[in-house]
Image (cartoon, rainbow over all chains, first blue to last red; front, side):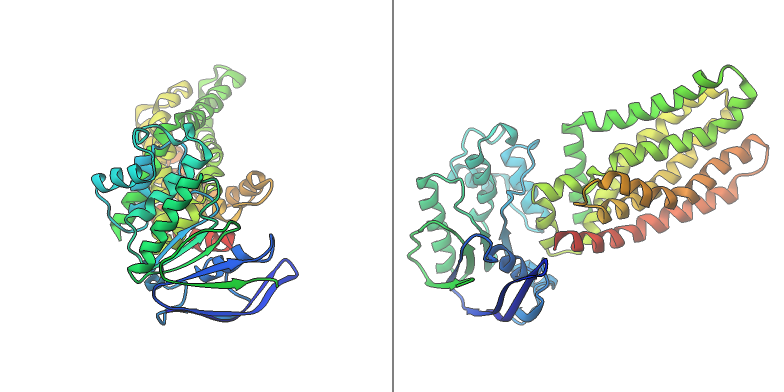
Length: 203
Length: 222
């Protein structure tokens, strides 16, 4: 499904990595590991097409990362939460789904917010939420997300242990449905479903 | 296609309504700048009538400039811009939605305020109507061209000053035909030619600028 070959990344005169390649099939999870500054986020941004690689190629089911067919299959969660402080969690969730070109009913959105533990705070502007709660608003998008490729940058940051376990289960369920996922993380996480692979950067 | 334009526009309008301080600051700037001239020049009706179109148009350009730096900056900072760029529709349509929303919260209110402010300059009713019409027709071009500048200076330190240097020269044609139409009416000549050119500028910039801005945004996101 997702195949990367001989990727080279140069950021500001410095070569971060070269010759990186992997193949990810349905139901497989790829952990990107490496020290701070090893180029994990750069590699993720290459995979989703925001950063063109210096050389090498990336294909997803035969499509290039910048194509619309690729983007229709992709769900990306970045370092930033992509939520608006002025909007409520419910509005943020519905807006982000609509702007991604999908549809979600209000009942489904409320259910997703309940699952991430924000029941009772749906109508509170996000500026009054804590860091962890804001992260949960961003993660609520994943609950009903059925796109086959998830690319998650440090999804476990700012979450408490119960939320980490919940998210691990959610990713596991996604793998069992036949989805693929790429994620970076510094903490040990327990995802049992699917096949786990690992890619060490800057080793 | 149209859905995404509407969705982006609705979201930006909702956000603008939640932080009205930004919008009112722009409008107050416009009101104050336009009102300072009659106070500084004194009650010479003839001189004021001559100055009015130019002053109102220049004030409208500067007021629009004030709101431009935030057009994409907030979305870049909180990660929304990445999500918009990754959505499975052309980024140009997203920018078009943002440009339309920007016009609705800056250009449109400026145009609607203009006839009231124009009274300070002793403009005739005809001239006031033409002034409002030129602003209604010309301000979409300001939002469109401004979006290119805002996208090009996104994430640049001191981008605000650079943005003015980039965008203000591009506003010159809009200024000339906008203020020219009012001058022509005051002088008793027809303003049809000016209106046609303003409309052409507005359609061209709202039609093409979003795609240029989208290309600049992709570079800013790398």
